[in-house]
Length: 402
Ligand code: KDG
Ligand code: MG
Image (cartoon, rainbow, N blue to C red; front, side, top):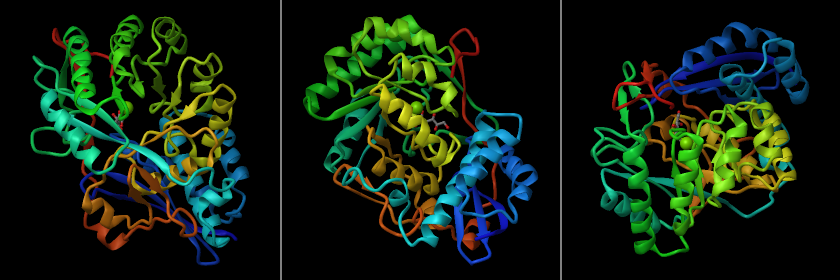
């Protein structure tokens, strides 16, 4: 089955997405997601200008060889733009193979290891009470796990918390806005939030929290210790982990489980975190980690060290990524939990899909391939709009870790 055409579709149905469509001489096509929040056009150019011309005429079934060709052949390895582009190609090829063999992608990955994929969703609010009411709303919908974030008293805006009356979306249209940060205020506030949530919801609900890389290792250790009484499912991105060894310090002080990895792209970015058992959950995602071909290798390494996978699944990955993640989660042995933020109805209309949610679990569906399509006519009505993630500064103006 030969690749005859490949093109990038950039659209913005409420937010920007980069979708790759690969077509073959047998009429079967596949979709891949190459969305990199705030840097979308860099991936689109990497694909259109440098990768796609090399794909024409290749055998679409040679997924491994094409992966190695794009990774090793480029000379310049790793990095989010490169790995998102390779990820998009890889996803599209698994989609094609599934459709050609008339089976869902999870069957190509070894078949189901479980009946459903436990997901967590996001509750956030302007104060503890509003966040708590959001958690209650999701508990009513059957969620078994909820990530809770609340605005920090005394700060004008907090990343990860929606503006009043709007659903939370990480990027904002236009040039980057700036948020304020105070570690002192944050460390005082988070234990109060979780104390209240445990009082209201008891001990069985899985509660998660994202620090968005804001703390130094010793501050992260302190936070991990102070929330121990509230048994978090995980504390995410407590400290930026480019310096993987810094997690040793946190580990020495707390038994709160740690999740890291949504900004990482290759097995080399997490090797020390995994082999020294410095984390409990790995957040790398199919889209930004070179696709299913590479993430499977990462997951296998993680399994040797009892690290479970807990993939990133925000709205800034398209439904194509969500589907790929669910096929992956359903099949791997060391699955932990999957993030699930809800796409807008316009996004869902542009990307019709077969995955579904029921009582705390998701399922990718049994359609051949990934089970997602794109309505190109509708997508064309929503052209790209410049958008960025906010920039973060301390109260004295210092540009701070994000
Ligand atoms: O693009 C960045 C967002 O996806 C990220 O900030 C959201 O931290 C996030 C999460 O855990 O979903
Ligand atoms: Mg996160």
